[in-house]
Each structure stands twice: as C-alpha cells, then as structure tokens.
Image 1 (cartoon, one colour):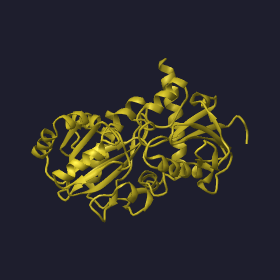
Image 2 (spheres, one colour; image 1 turned 30 degrees about the vertical axis):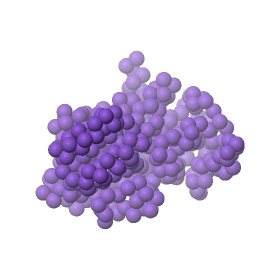
Image 3 (tube, rainbow, N blue to C red; image 1 turned 30 degrees about the horizontal axis):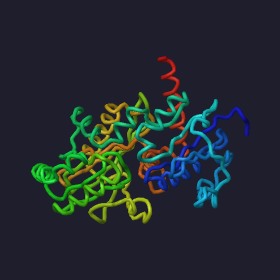
Length: 359
C-alpha cells in the first residue's frame, strides 16, 4: 500500500434518526471498495454530533463492528474501534475524497456538502443546492411542478399554521385531498416520521408525529399504486436504469420494515409495460437534471393500475445496504457494486475539477 494512493474518507453515522442505516450503508460501501487502489479512512459522527477519527483501513473488514462506537454515561468508549475525537475541519487532507454516507438531516440536506465546499475537498454525490432542494419534500414538489413532472396532489402545512388554527388546516386538507392521506416531515427520509391517516383523528396524530422531526409537513393524497424506482448516475452525462419495484404486502412500509425487519421484497426489473418503463426513465432524468443532480440519485414513482406515473421523490443519497434498491438496480444493468463505487469516485473527482476550472 503506497501513501500516494487516493484516500477515501468515509464519513458516516450522523445526528439524524437514520444514523444506524448510515452505518449499514457504510459497511456495504467499504466491503465493495477496491482496496488495491484505495485506502479508507473512517470518520464517524456519533448521535450527538461528535466527530471521531477511526482506523485507516487497507482491506475490507469482516464485520461492521469496526464502524461502531458505543459511549458510556461518562463519555468513555465502551465498545467499538479505537478512535480520536477531532474537530470537523481536521478531516481535510490532500489526495483524498470524502464519501458522505449520511442519510437524512445534517447528511444529505446540503449542510455537510456546504462544509466540504468550504474545506475545498472533493466529495461524492450531489452538491449543496441539489441536496437541500431534494431533501425538502415541499421544495421538490414545486420544482417538479415547474418541470411538468406529474405528482400526487399535496398540501404543505406549517406547524405554526396548524397550532393557530387546526380546523382550518383540517378543512383545507379534507377539501383538497381524500383519505387515506400520507403525512410526512418536509425534511426527512427512509420513512421516518411518515404516517398514513384514514380519518381526521389519525390526521391530527400524524401531523403531531411529523412535527417531531420538522416544523413543516407535507400532506399527500394516498393512492392505490405500485412503487417503482429508477436509479440515476452521472454528472453531465446522465444514465438511468430499468425501473425496479418495491413489492408491497401491506399498505405502507415504515422504517422498521425497510431496515430492521427486512420485510421488503423487490422485483428487478419491474414488470411494467415498455412505454411506462421508458417514461419513468425519462422523468427520472428530467427531475435529476432540473435539480442539478451530480453523482447519484434514486427517483421513486407511484404507478397506478391505469399505468399513470407520479414522481414521489428524488433521493440524493439512497441506501447502500445489502437490501437497498439503488445498487441492485445497477447490478441488473451489468454494473457491479465495486464498479459502481469506482464510478462514483471518478464522478466526484470530475465534479471537483470542473468547479475548480470556474474559479
């Protein structure tokens, strides 16, 4: 292993409720990295926001224990790797690229991306504006509207509006949408804080749940639909995959079903008509381009029994766990996991070089 080899600084964990998912994703990433060409420096962000510099890996670890730290009440490490608490800016070094495997707020919402921009370090994934806009479900809706991309009817609801006049909010939601409705925090992912409501009482409880995570919530029309997902890869030259399907056995998959119980079933590729397949890919590319996407994203659609497509959201840092749709979609296209990681590294370096040319 030569010191001149490019170092991947794997930034993972984070303060968001998706902390544990990020650890699972990070382990999958380092299991696929080509260590013949790279070293991997672990940098863990614990649930309080403390940054810990872990070991420098020169080969793939056997288990994810190397990624985990557990603190006792006095602040001492009781389990996990031997690390050093650092200031965030201490991750800066030459001949390195940051892979922010961070899901949710403070990870894929533009905050980390902006920080890495100030450090003048290349990183993998979407930039500041794209990350912030795509993370905000309400902002995404408005951008998709401007692009002419179909989506289900929705009502944005601010917490202050709801507290001041809940009846007015209920009347607006019920006057615009039909039950069932889905209520989501504006800035959250992986089904965290998302609830299905069948009546006004459940709508009230769902809004209270959403406001645990954000002061802005999105109420969407529930529809009887299949869930179709398309993976996107690239900077200027954007590529898409054939869509895959999340095969539902229940009306709604929550966070536990997705990541803890692993009860999600996937069909790759999805069994849909060829014209629907192409339309999903076209919409995914358009949404990605409109949001200024770079690196990667996963576009999630609803598909009705009339073959109507509605774009639900664009995820700029989709899960990389062994159960995740994004890498499996590319594997179906002939791009293996390790090669996918390699492409993402090269896209991140290219984006950094292009930005430097503008300065």
